[in-house]
Image 1: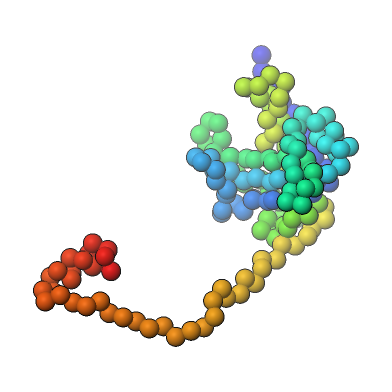
Image 2 (image 1 turned 90 degrees about the horizontal axis):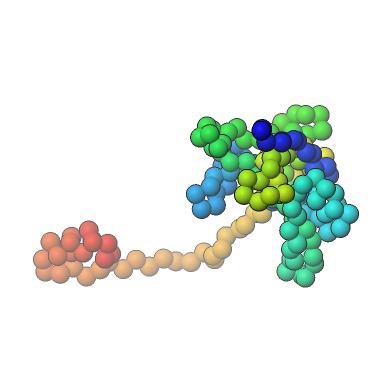
Length: 176
């Protein structure tokens, strides 16, 4: 009997973390993947996600605010060992959007491929298939600025032993 599969679209989800740059997938242990994490503090949205077969996790931020979170991933190599394509990021007109420009708080529709979890009966695996930006909050990297003030640098050469070969051995050993 073939596995029951389906697609789901998570509508109007607030993006918290997006890692969908085709050239720079995310990594965790040996896994290499693209991912998006969505959040909500609305229990009705949480119930909708559960009705779609998702498993939102209860989380708490540094200010003790409670929210629900789901992370969706797509591995760079599929279960058959073949390379996967990065899921597309598009806007409402279905034009490509640079995934690195999508900031936290952006509202997106998330396209998922759902299959039964082979290890846990009654649970589903959600594979990230694409993302559509509905409300684009552009990510702007912080300027950062210098971490140090300008200062003079004094260079002190190590004292050399009588035998230059001793010094060369120390340098080669990484002592200096």
